[in-house]
Image 1 (cartoon, rainbow, N blue to C red):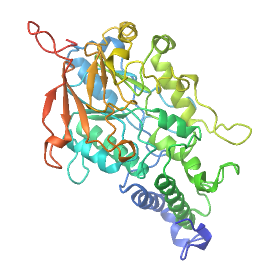
Image 2 (cartoon, rainbow, N blue to C red; image 1 turned 60 degrees about the horizontal axis):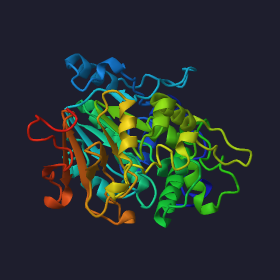
Image 3 (cartoon, rainbow, N blue to C red; image 1 turned 120 degrees about the vertical axis):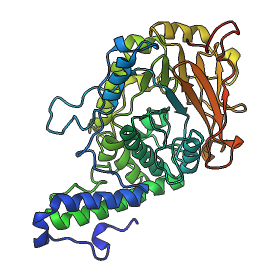
Image 4 (spheres, one colour; image 1 turned 90 degrees about the horizontal axis):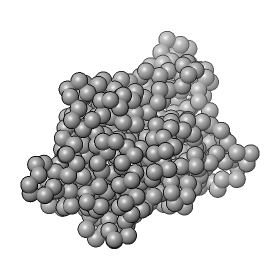
Length: 434
């Protein structure tokens, strides 16, 4: 698949007279063909056709005991799509940072390019069937970042979550994928953890994109996208050029699949983040973090050497939102619970923080700091140990459960258990966070 497009037999290179009436239809057909070849799914429209921006809701509707009107506002914001067009010079609306609670929220940890474990986690949660179709109805799914690196099926994972995002929206649910440190690192050209299979995956992507460009040229008279590798600096090693082209800020793939992924998301009383939040992040502004992260992803700016611009400061150093480990040490005695409590107090109504980033083995998903820190990275990817998938479930913003895939036959939802450390004393009703 690394053959240049001019050497592919049968590639159309000249405009055909009969194409004048159907250029748009032909282009969409080619896009669908390339999508299926690359990701195994057919997605309607590319970034220029159907971006998926969501409007934030007002914080007044974010009390954990929100009324029905608050839930209606949530539904309206989730279903508000295709509201931004490239002709709008004001840019896309801001990403949703805070949303009302949902009856059922599922959180999934780091996946790292393992499509089999992604499916296992989703089926454990009862969110997909054997054909990868959304079955979660109004469930809200939050994947806490790190789809990329350490595995060889990164694009298949990315396409699957995008497909489910669209299907969930149609069913009254939602899928939110956060940015992790392995996303932001790749966007800067940091490919240390890209596997050989992962590099080949993106080389296949580039070959199919080039083939699609050649087919579109047949009916668009050359008015087609440029070679996806044309903007990549010559300093980049040949086996990494396709990955750089796909994952550099401003690229069509990032605009399409990552530009609306927030760094921080609050659903009801639960804050979701890849690494963790510190007081300095709250002071800087969570909406501002999401907005500036999105602006960076959409910007095609390059350094003088042709490499991608470095991302915002809150993506770097050990205190970055995608790197913090203060609350995720496997030894709970090391976790800074006072710092966590101070951070949550700065976000009125927030009772718990759910994070990935640090593998929780042995033991799997667990809670510490009196149930206020919930760690969901179980190292399920084969590149991280290959643990059985586990998912976190939050019911009506109060009850916190964990479901383990190994307890049920393959393809069936697992059995839920109350997550230890999140229960209220016996004389209290409900669970911690009420």
